[in-house]
Length: 365
Ligand code: FSX
Image 1 (cartoon, rainbow, N blue to C red):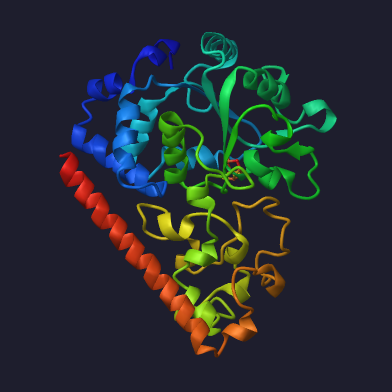
Image 2: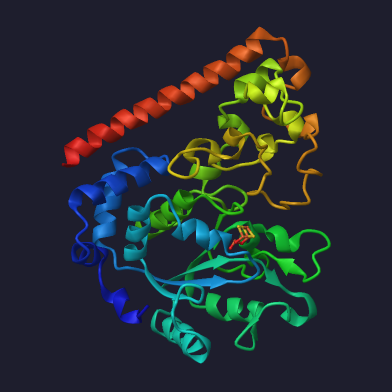
């Protein structure tokens, strides 16, 4: 972690690390695809990435469990992860860096001074304001002080995880430390929230690449990238046809559970949760909580933990705005048809995208 690295272009670093053109183009294509951009945008991403100087990144951690950084660094796509760490100059991260104490505080001061106005800040964890911020201090400075001082020279802030985006677990009732999200404190910088407890690794990396190449992506009302947070889990869930047919698991080991029916009655928060788990999935696209038989907890939404009551209590029907009420859906062949048709449309879209990606790869090669 040295500030000298920021003077290198991304192309310099990729060349030095022996990253082949093929690997690089594949990465650009999958990033464009993840961000729901047209396949041709992968060429733009490639051009912009190669000429871009590696932005300096300061990674700050406050009230959190380190699950977000674990998610990022134990990503199932080490090559992408390596590329990301090659594409940015991670100049300060007190969890990963070898330096400690005074040495690390000096490192932070130096990075800020040398990159003032240009560095990207990545923040995980909520910030406690109670009792003057004494619940989270580093080097004698409170988290709120470190955040405020560091944000002054930042070009943009990416909040990784629900804690920094919305307060998350630290903000849960009774919130003894007075925890707040970053956006309650910093109001004069662009903020991108990549929520999730933890967030999906590919969503974090794709968001960072989008920022480096094309700037701040299109965001929803909660400042989350629309490409990943534009649909509910329920909208994209492979169990959705069972919801539309009124087929529900009632316990974790009944016939419905064994048949893979909808988990709504077991408390699934998919209908009110915006995230990409159902499409991007986890562990190399292996699965996601609903696929392994557990209801969605709604971890990427504001007020995660306190909202919508118990994790295992069904959502009130009135909260499910995007679909017909269950009573109407159950037994209605037309409703089941809508669910199946929607699923089939999604599969077709995925196939079209896959074909476009393959075509683009062979063209670029
Ligand atoms: Fe919070 Fe992240 Fe959950 Fe943990 O840094 S979003 S508790 S996975 O670690 O902040």
